[in-house]
Image (tube, rainbow, N blue to C red; front, side, top):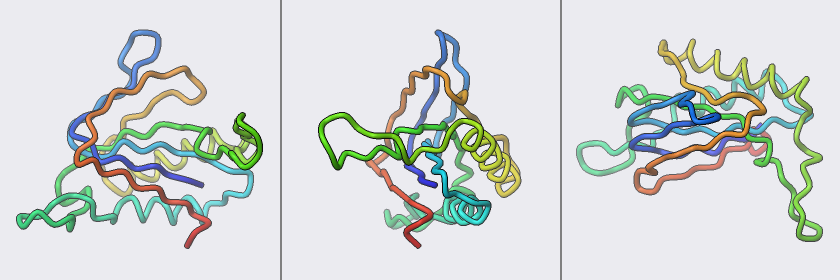
Length: 149
């Protein structure tokens, strides 16, 4: 399972002209699920996302986590995070899990983040054509793969 975390001042996801999810200060998180992912991978990444310190403290040092700054979450599924570009110029997505596996895992991840934060998590729509707008703060962008522990 892979996460691409972007610290944002604001972010939103639009589907067919309508805003589906919108946040202020917080994290826009793109999620990719592989065939091999387990509940252990999900829990590992949920805990990392909850505790990762990417917000500035009073000294301008990234030392605060999402909870400490009362940040919001916008979580969007994105199978292209699993792209392989080893051969040729057309990426391969063979590592991405099929919808029957990835949709439930993505939905459990969102639910787990709601449990851990005690707050509603904004989302996109699994499998939809989405337009995402964001103001990346910093910029700060972090990639975490549950297989690289």
